[in-house]
Length: 278
Image 1 (spheres, rainbow, N blue to C red):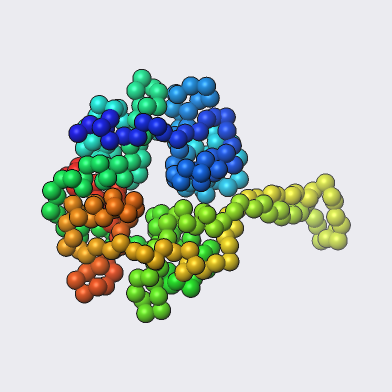
Image 2: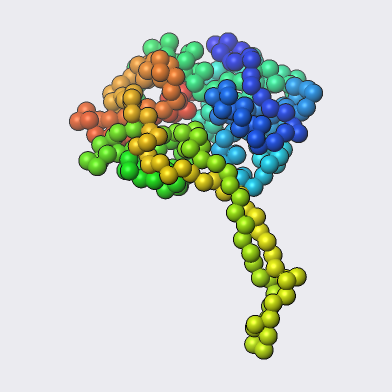
C-alpha cells in the first residue's frame, strides 16, 4: 500500500507571512493539532506548525519564527511502511506529502491505523509496543501543575488517577491548551550599578521594562477537563484489535492494564505503527 492510498489530500494549512492568532483559530475550527506552512500564493512547503510549537514559543507572534523549518516529508508513491518507519524514528505523528516541492497531502499515524493497520491480521500483543514511563497525576491536581508533569515526560498525554490510585481519566495536550491563554507580564529591572555612597539615588534612564508572554491556565482541576469515557486494552490485546478500537473512537492513545486490572502503560498510534515497520 502506498502513501497516496491513505493520505489526506484536502489539507488544512497556513501561509507565511502569518500570525499566531490565525493559526490557533484554524486549529480550533478544524480540530487539528498541526498545520503545514506554505509560502503565500503558492503550495511550496516551507515548514510545519504544531500546537506544541505555539506553547513553546509564547513570545513569538509570527509563524515564520515559530514553525519548524527542518521538514521531514514523503512522496505519494512511497510505501506506507517507509512513512511508518520515519514516524517511529523521529517520534512524529504527521508527515507532509510533497511532490516537486509542493504540498499535495498529509499522512498521519492515525491514517495508518485507520486505513491500513486495523485491517492487517497482526496478532502481536500490545505489551510489545506500549510505553511504561508515562505521566500521571491525581485528579484533584490543578491544571498548571499537571501540565508541568506532562511536559517533564515530553509527552502529549497525561493519565488521571483517583484517590485510590486507579485510572479515572485522560487528558491530551489539546485539552490543556483549550483551558489556557497567552498573557503578558511586565517586570521592572534596575540596570544601574550604584556605589555605597549613592545607594539611594535613582536614574530613570537605567530602568529596563521586560514584557514576557506565558501560558496561564484556568483554575480547573484535572478531573474537570479529563475525558472519563475511556477505551482501555490489556497487555494481551492484539495490535489488530487495539488499532480497531482507536479507529472506532478516533483516538490516538489508549491506556494499558494488566490481567489484574492495574495500569501498566500507554500505547499511542505512533507506537502501534511499529508493527508495520517491524
